[in-house]
Length: 138
Ligand code: FES
Image 1 (cartoon, protein in one colour):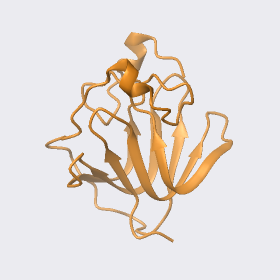
Image 2 (cartoon, rainbow, N blue to C red; image 1 turned 30 degrees about the vertical axis):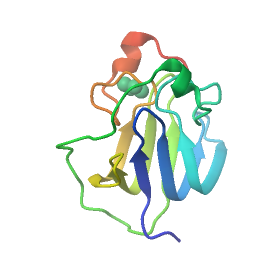
Image 3 (cartoon, protein in one colour; image 1 turned 135 degrees about the vertical axis):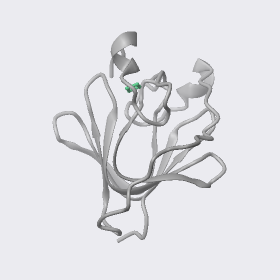
């Protein structure tokens, strides 16, 4: 059992997830589990929801230095983090987690979060509904 689940927002790149993580597809099938998973947040991976390096070619930009995010008091510390793909939309993260900036500092703690995977949210790393307007598919 891990002490914390961390989602590190890498500058111009993916979400680096460490801890005890499970990723499920939109049908509830387990896609991957592990202690170290790398998830696409640019919307261009050919292997969604995982990163395949396409952010470089796509020229994805976001410095990963979020400010002023609201935090939750963590519940069930030591519990696993579950990530579920929403079709053509965000990833729903459930479980205690820290959201880390690109420099490793903690931007927020959450028990649930909708994480952008289309690359167009104005509130990265969280979804703001922009996937609907851009016709994101994945
Ligand atoms: S998935 Fe990007 S704004 Fe919702």
